[in-house]
Length: 241
Image (cartoon, rainbow, N blue to C red; front, side, top):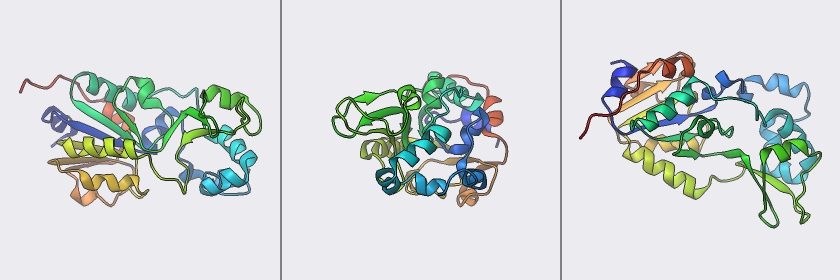
């Protein structure tokens, strides 16, 4: 069965995506280019993007963060746009994403569960005041609130837990789905990857360049670029129940 046929035959589709969804928008998957990053930084990305490092070396954290984690000019690609179109047509119930770039929302998707937060939200750790991503980008050193507190991006760092409300919403959406499309993720990063165990639907589609632990359980496995695959989908409203 083709992806088009699967989408046409289901009414409650949920999309679960990882870094590979955004690479076609020019946002690199840092795990695939650690060597490049390590030429410039004294620590690997996983160390810099940890809670411990953030608290102990905030200047180095924000130097890396501004350089590598704030692609504010990036635009949604065909995958983001098609998912928003599927939602508007009543086919897609929700997007669950591991990405922090906000491109699903920028493309027009409304029901988006950002498991690892978003670079577009930033709050003072002392008083809670909100700041824009542009403000973070344009400041120097450690961004400091008017109250004197440090402004932290609302992204989940290593050693931090996921937001309970976001996880609950994602779990509910996945449980209610009758088709789950998983794309651009190796399904090896936990706890996010563990959410797939809540899926009870009939069909699972995997779109990823490399093999995943769930390949044998999938109805359909596609080894092509996510944007090219989803961009070719024709969208029609579901038939009335």
